[in-house]
Length: 250
Image (cartoon, rainbow, N blue to C red; front, side):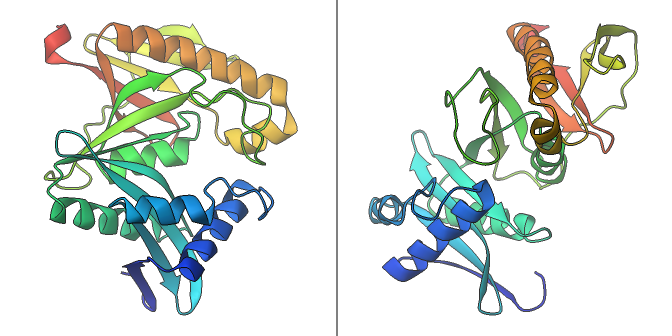
């Protein structure tokens, strides 16, 4: 835990309103139109979910929302925190879920955001189990506007040690070329690798058309791979996903 930082579940209206404002700031929406309004957060807590808030001293520095799902699972609706705090917030969610009897946690994220992929797959040890094409439809926030909302579902085994992802360096022949002209996908036996842009958020702001070409290119690789029984198991520091073929699909 970072010195001076505390993480706790919040239930009161004022704290939930502050969390709603935090999410507005992260997703660059007006605070009058937050992606998760305070009244929605309050309803989720009342229904048995949990809102965790991370405080750096008195300052709200991160938050997450989770609800219990079927078959001893948990769904993490959203999580956003200052750099260095994301891991602590996610572990707090994990502790809450385990205490509620859950065995797994699922959530979605934009597969083009490599740093989030590395956090989810490499640091936490979750597995990408489902590719969702344009999951939310058009999004009008300041981060996703102008793009299509493809998402990768990850499933986290809460009993496994964090950081247990299996990652193999990219190798094998190039099977697809990226919009920048360099390799997009490589394949070798039971493994497939797919590269994403260095910073898709900056690329989306600078060149939306090129960012959309990356979206379609990565989508094609993932949809085909998941149909064949591959799952996302790792992400390298230089932006390459590792996808491994499951035993059932062998």
